[in-house]
Length: 75
Image 1 (cartoon, helix red, strand yellow):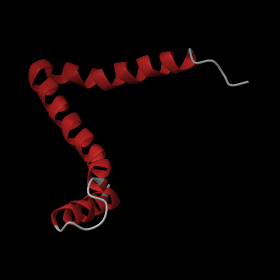
Image 2: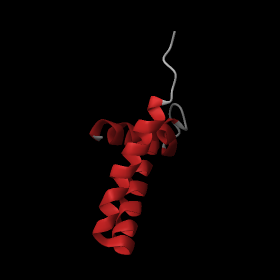
Image 3: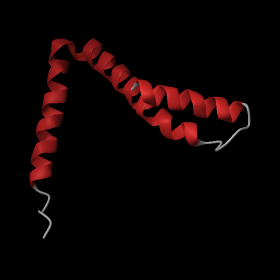
């Protein structure tokens, strides 16, 4: 994530200083937004559901596993 943070900062500086591609920083911001959103969601789930919230990632991973098994193999 450090490289993404550096590229995000460089892109944002380029936007502020009017150099290079103006919106390249947005591409680098997406992983950080996902990280922040995931942390906020996890904190909210922990506050609402207590230790039972720990099962949410497990159940999500299991659902994605079942879903991936339904994807047909390429020919």
